[in-house]
Length: 347
Ligand SMILES: NC(=O)c1ccc[n+]([C@@H]2O[C@H](COP(=O)([O-])OP(=O)(O)OC[C@H]3O[C@@H](n4cnc5c(N)ncnc54)[C@H](O)[C@@H]3O)[C@@H](O)[C@H]2O)c1
Image (cartoon, rainbow, N blue to C red; front, side, top):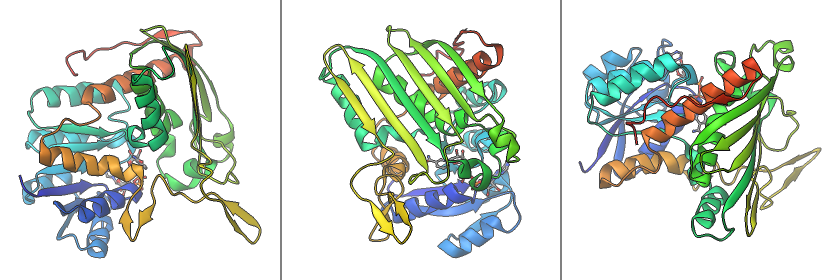
């Protein structure tokens, strides 16, 4: 394969980014876009010069000549398009989380077992420069043996009330907690054995969005590490960054502290307002997508073309979902819950 022909499912905010990233890649192109909302894929295809658009995924897959499919539908709607692509032997990049229910995990793992294509899930925080450096430092033994970790990844209310029309059908655990769990598993280098979570609700419901405000979770890993994880969707909209993102890793001989909310590289003061411009996540340099949230997507293309292993395995994504299902159960019943891993055959 010298050139990768991509089809994109979901013509929303992030689907548009996917299209632009493939178009900017020297060895990729976008041949089709699908979105169930009439006119939406067509409008994006026209805007970005994509040759074909569809309202139905299966019709697109049967009618376009693509090598791989990017599934960029809302969090709860990743299974149908993924299974349709797998059945037709197309490689798949699935936006995080891979699924939000045990039922979807069952259907997706069955389809994965029946296919021999390559699948990656876009858990992009592994490409986030300070987190990549933290992972590397832990691997080289710079802080000794990891003892505990703290990670906080919150969004402003605006994301739940305004940006995502489907926020009530997801939650902060699926939207951002999927990144937090993956980051912890990756850096700690072990699986989560047991979780204890507490949730609070009401602020978003008052604002008309029927979803949980925040989860505070303790996670115990197989290797003895204990972590605290905070995920909330009610950070004030006045926060200079849409994310409120901190992390500490405590080792037997050292510590790593990350403040990814305020990168302290640039502050922009305009009349009456201070902002911290995004120069690491979704930024562009000379019109080309440059941030780490774009590098993960580009990496999917690169690894398919070179044959290298993906930096996130399907097993990583599946186990992350199983951890979140345990967190939700714990927050519901008020007791610690052992994570129920049902797919050990996925590496
Ligand atoms: N990796 C990242 O940095 C990142 C950032 C933002 C969003 N995301 C993920 O990308 C996915 C899409 O997010 P978004 O912000 O683009 O959402 P969005 O609402 O802007 O776009 C989703 C699109 O999917 C379409 N769609 C396709 N199939 C659908 C179905 N079965 N039901 C309902 N709608 C369907 C909708 O019409 C809509 O156009 C989510 O899973 C989200 O978590 C990832």
